[in-house]
Image (cartoon, rainbow, N blue to C red; front, side):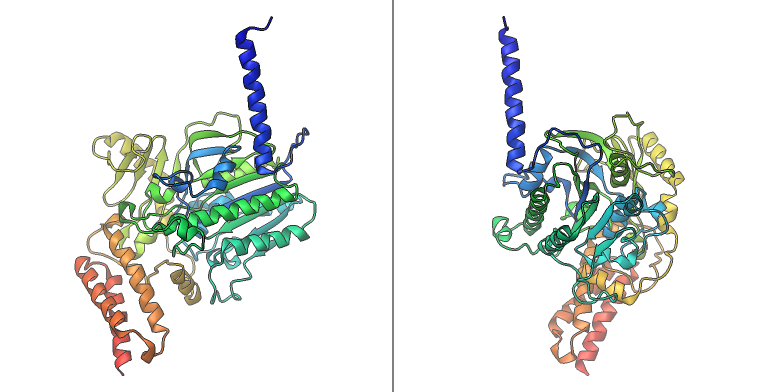
Length: 507
């Protein structure tokens, strides 16, 4: 006779089975009893500038990411995934090579990837179709990110000059993907899709602007999430999704005012380094969480293991789906932008649960206890800080950040970066008499970026079309900033640029 406990277990098993079938029906993904050894489709979806803490419920409002929330129920969610660099091009370089910037050679937007085999090159050599669809000119093929892709859709960026449109919407990206799906063959496919939302400027379309009125960043998050749902649905309609390996992540987050960082690229706090990472295995019907410290460099090794491809040379990442127990890891992050301002660039090293940030004023945080990085433990845990500082010096990360870039960024690329909100010095890096920390110049840097964009725009107008009052305000604000940070020559240069516009306008 069955015991009540056995009956309860049977009811629970039946309930779980019903929920699993319901989940598949909810997603409209076809289900089969066969087991696929290797996925026939690998999808890597990168949603640019997406903070991990904006995925799922946030505050008292509704979730901005219902589609990703659904995907998470049948995926492994990595709760401590970190970007190696808060800039689009080099971060994607790490995703697609399995290497940190110190090894793939790109430390900045506009700086092309160096030599080294990419994930699409490896897959293409093994007979896979490889296609990439990007939403911003910062990932243009001229920067080496397209190596190995048979089809790489950046053609909407006008020619090789990078002028004209520098970004496109996620809906436009999806439309290009669907056209490719109709023409691609039945061979195994690797599909890299990049959305630029929620990168600034935050201009979500209806109904997302109205739904998240007052929080346009989350409005763009919701827009990107809706596009992600449409992309997954398009794959499901073609019976491609159930057997697919799906990876959804972001290249970096967004400051949104945390630690005085408005956007990203200058500092290495978790607001820009902590990114979402979801991995759905083929035929998965349930999800789970993984709390290990992991990095975007782990994506390439994970894909290669899933498709059963061996790699002879060592990569910086690991297979995240392996059942093997990995030894404790040390992860790296960097950003060299502060060098252009004469400040110490913040390199970071992670060793669970600690994070050490190098700089003129070093910092140490326990991310498990203090995820917001509000309590600097550098003084009270000096031995831990020193051990991580030594590891960072020996890694070569700091030396590589300070090494001169090979080849100057051309004028067209510089203008493209400025149009996307990345301020760049016109001349060599600023040299200050006293060392500054990157966080010392954060507020001034982001004011500078906005003012610089205004000067650049006004300079392209005919003198009689320029807004003289606006230019005068820019000149006064730049002069005031320079008074606050007299060591930073860029502010004086900006004031001089605005002053020249005033003089030209009066001629």
